[in-house]
Length: 83
Image 1 (cartoon, one colour):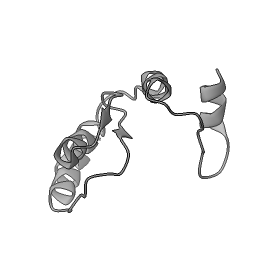
Image 2: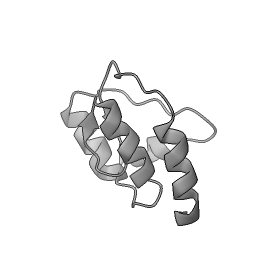
Image 3: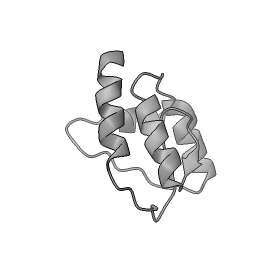
Image 4: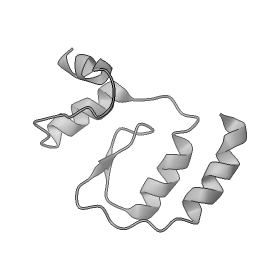
């Protein structure tokens, strides 16, 4: 994925991000963020970083999440959350 990083970074940097209305949890660090610049940086980093799924879900629950909705085909992520 490293070759795609530069192109992705350029596209993300040129895109206007607004402050989100709720915290965004990203796979790169599993922490909530509402800072558009942090979110942009993390999007680039997570292209080549390990996915921290378990830590993300644990942190979302600690942050008050009570329901998770999986959009798309299948239910793999819902199964992981149940575990």
